[in-house]
Length: 591
Image (cartoon, rainbow, N blue to C red):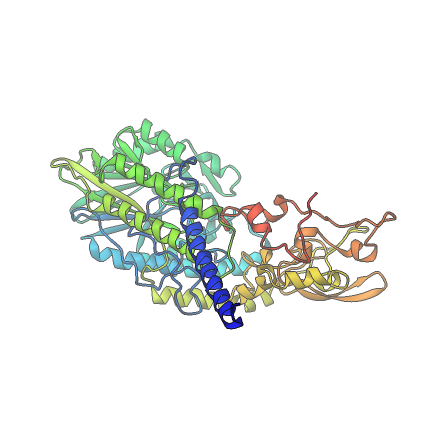
């Protein structure tokens, strides 16, 4: 007969073996997850990231977001042999900083753009800074209450353009949201010259061209627009671009321009049409709706260039001129086949990353980190192929083009960083001077009541909600001085700008609900964001059959898409995300 101590020891050994087996199996599962779907469909990647992105390095300081690298840990590069550069932005749209809603949208920031340009200029013998339009505003029309904030924002944009040394811009249709006079005065303050061969402001034609001395190159710049975009813009008229651009190019040639850049405020197709129709243009910058791509199309005798909008990418063009006035050749980098293969693999791994359910803020599971590290390593290899192995022809003119992502880790401009922070801090005072009322409720219309009313019956649901990210939506704005930013707050509160809902400065207020007076608290993303206004439901929650009434019991994907738009939540997946806001006590309907 075995002693109890012997039996006990055997149990401990068995438990240890089982524990070790569990660890091994968990590691195997993680490895399998990384290898999953290797034979699945592959989407073509058309983005280019200079220097290899820093993935999920968490920096320090109040303005650093989850996933950000510390400023200065990523440095600009200048691929290929030495030559002057042409830098440009397309569609800044007044964005002073990237949306901080998710780690996928951390590109951009006016302090980062100006910091990058200042550092990158040292790598080039000379640089010209251009802008392709839609510099100031995101929308063509502004509501009265938005004007003070937009004016304050343009002050920062003016300072940024001065820091960048922007020389010319072509007016975008969004630039006139506050009128022609405001636009012209703003550019005058910034020291930026507007040009457009086929555009008139207030009946007066703009200069069509500008000639810039770029080291030993006479750089001719011509501006043009797609007239379809300006039909409803007051005080602005536009004609067909081709005849005007033909005349402008001829004028530039007479002035001795050796290289000609078209700033076209139109989409890729409109830009290609002008390049096809007009001889003598070397490069066409796409100013309206540029894609996130490094693809360059050769059209006519020129080449299209795109840099993603909102300041997320900066277009960086290096000119290698040996034969003045001759066409330019795109200096291919590395083996095209090898590059495309690597692009496909990176894109596939990014798709794998998207399939994982979202993790909580500031969490970084090991399996995801390993996948991100693998992507970063391959992106670095891709960049090496593109930069270190640039193939410049022995004779003739050549160029190297990179749309450079304004990624976390790049140097920042301290002055612009301070100006942006001051702007954010000023928003509360600005908004306090604007009289805003909550949209009125029509007779018989339901209105928003706030979570505290829902919690009177739905105790378990409230307890579950308090553990979700939705419950701290306002806190995330407060951390960055964005609670009074009209471009942010609407997706962090209940019923924003809806009848009986909320507006800036009115998130807490009294309201009559039947015979009762309630105190609304419409902070954070609450029950009614998904289930609709709850006033009628609170007063008559069930029908004669005992079923819930006057409420949307089963929210659908379109409800989420009001805020989880591709712009701010590019990896949104309804099936995955909904699991993060449902669970014990707040189950998703199985109907």
